[in-house]
Image 1 (cartoon, helix red, strand yellow):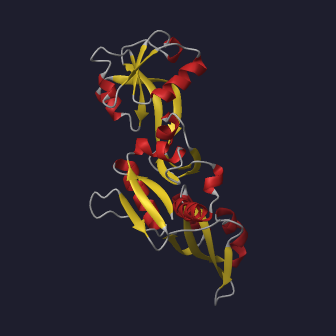
Image 2 (cartoon, one colour; image 1 turned 180 degrees about the horizontal axis):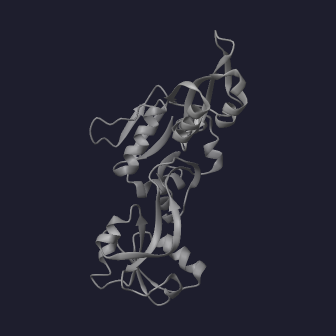
Image 3 (cartoon, one colour; image 1 turned 30 degrees about the vertical axis):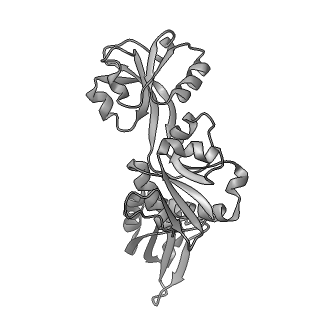
Length: 282
């Protein structure tokens, strides 16, 4: 039986549980239990604090886990990132008061408040800057107002929290983050049951990026239509009862899909239908 760690609360937890369930695993808690056993797939799911998952995985207590890239990289011994999951995206940035003239080139000698000390330490080392790190567990944006820091370094999603605190970001993002699967090593990720888990998750992640589009078009327009919907290898083209027309079916990226539909319609395509894909393997 393999052990897989899932976040026990928050946005990461919601996204991870939904993804794992779509991949065919039983991981739903009925209450606040710390673990759920999926005997059909020979997996035990452990629900842990997102920040702790990297610790357990890196020490080999847990085979693989889902957490944020930022949380993994902030661990003293980061685990190996083996898959990006496409949700929970954010950036990690420095921020200062709106009226401040501090820039990322002027961090020397300042006090930087954060909840991710190791990420900040590594970034300061790259910049060859020496600053005092003030580590707090939460509400980082309040530290400047309370007089314990000059700069903050924190995860930024929409930026609304910073705006409410009258703060602005400075410099480029220190890093970008999203939900990821981590393992103790690449070798761990190649273990049969772990590899199956990763393949199933990858099928769901890919399916979320694509849709299946089907439509009828005049045979003489096959070339032009195929350029709009090339599919993975090539579109599926099927004859219709009317020899002058064919049916075309292809996987298409969801991004820009409405524009493709507009162009197909302008080309003269009929019966354009788009359907969701639940899982796929490319």
